[in-house]
Image 1 (tube, rainbow, N blue to C red):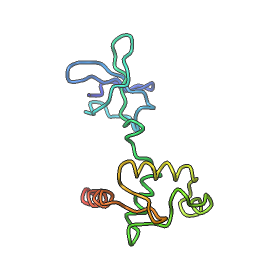
Image 2 (cartoon, one colour):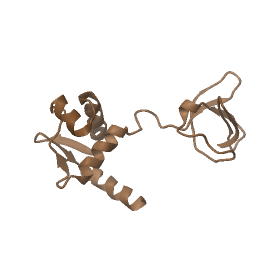
Image 3 (tube, rainbow, N blue to C red):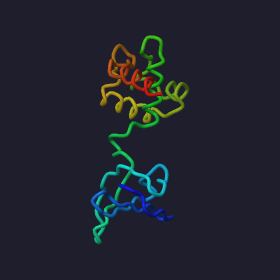
Image 4 (cartoon, helix red, strand yellow):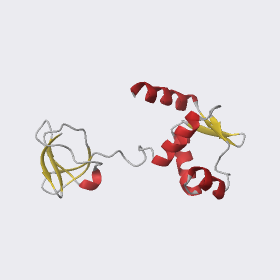
Length: 141
């Protein structure tokens, strides 16, 4: 996709096969530059055939800021584990991480679903995949 018109209401793009598309401001983190090439996913199609597009990943694919914070905490923990699980008290979680217990549980669930962390022995542990991700992130910086 190539941005060909930047408007207050959103960005108009055209694909390599001349399909027109529209990206609403809520479906992007920043406005593309005029002529910028990008990859977008199709959300739906307007009645006139224009594609409704998004530059954001699907919600279940995106890793939240809270999950990234927990992952970074685990990656920098000396033994690769911390003494917190979904059974920890809300006050302890809030005092250490600055987030609610609900946010903590969602973040832990996300990390566990991606096999980046696991819970056992009353602690949250970094998995081999979590360590490898840390090494890859370090190599790309």
